[in-house]
Length: 70
Image 1 (cartoon, rainbow, N blue to C red):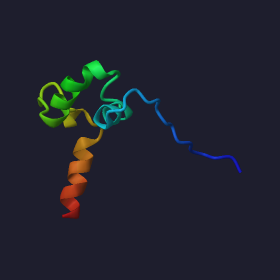
Image 2: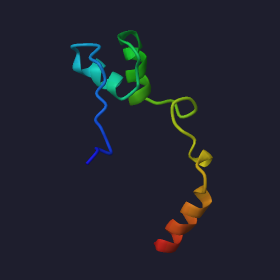
Image 3: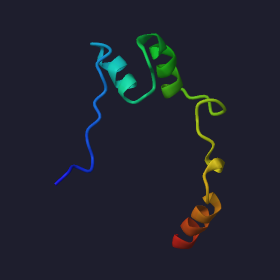
Image 4: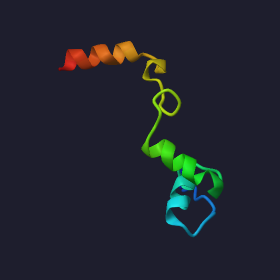
């Protein structure tokens, strides 16, 4: 039976665990981006670093459903 899903293991770019975790999660492409990525992740700027939830499709439907369920 063929496997439907396969692990995708990224290559090792650093012996530093913190750097490797940031890379694995797609937050950095190399070690030079580490400092900025950590700052953005831990102290996000709402205008630049966070996703605007109002861009989600059917947000109003979801909010109405939550209100009905509560």
